[in-house]
Image (tube, rainbow, N blue to C red):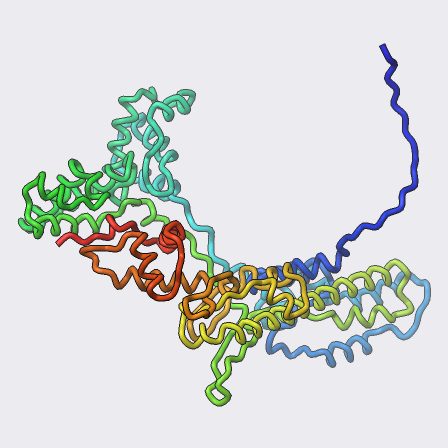
Length: 501
């Protein structure tokens, strides 16, 4: 058997590699941030870097006063005495220490409200989840059996975000067998689930399927009816859900009428009742979170020149600058080498952030000006006049990398006379119509939506007929492309769009 041996050695190798400097990486990160993210990033940088400070709009403190105050507070003499050094540090850092140690006290002294405390007070609280809301309801429910209360509370934890209980009771029993307070039999869980459905609001919460939730809601509406005609309509709606659920989903109205013997008016009343039901009852308690969108660019029309002008939407953006005090400290010969190095590094990092922000704004505005020039017809006439505009083409026009264009428009929004739109929407490929004019795929989608909206709902067009209608308008696309765009636009297939008279 050969002997195995491990050894180490040193070798010299020459080669060239290309890497990104930290400053370039920082510029790329800043460029990709939208307005809200940039605002948060600047606030974080101000907390980390003592040489970077926020300038409150309307503040009475200006650069001149700060520089004059710094000159007045600067020491006139030197020495190695420790007590003198302590006095000098207090004059230079006293205000900063007061803010860090007790910002609220500094705010009270000046009579102004501390911005950090104001931001914390105005920040929205974390919304409660659906399970938390249902637990609170269950705590007030009129259930006196301790085992039933324990089982109901456990079942609530398995209700999904739509308010449905889709987990099998056998699974709940297996995962809860070790918990005290209940025998955890299937019979107990079924009884507890019935009480959960009866006690909790809105109606339908805790149902095992969408169909069961709709039936539970419809029966609740029926119990509340005091009008005979409305009660009959709700009874018919319940029968449709129980017997013809798959047919109503597939819009097979003639089949339902044939089997029930109802006329069109009676079935329409039942369908009107079904439209009032909510297939996702849990969404009523905890609606999905909506993220506020702040535009990065504002575009306005100038009637005098007939042009569209753009500017940054930076009214809410925090104003930051390099602290004049720290810039002056860089020239203070009395500082030791360690302190001067710390100050120099902090000022250098602060300037790098400001340069990255300025470069971001410049690049963003350059890209927006190209958009205004190339997509003028969109601003004037709408979605169907959007032109193809690949990012590679814009990058060549601006003599920058295509990745820079991508970062510049990433998650950024434009407020214009046509509303709030994503900047990335303007960058897409496309095709040519029969007249040789360029059309983006977004414009093709808008044209297809217009074609579908103008169809006869009694005889809706199939996907092939939609493709033929688009070809008559000068746009030739395949049927499979029609299917893809129809699904992206949320347009139902022809059988589900059909209106039965």
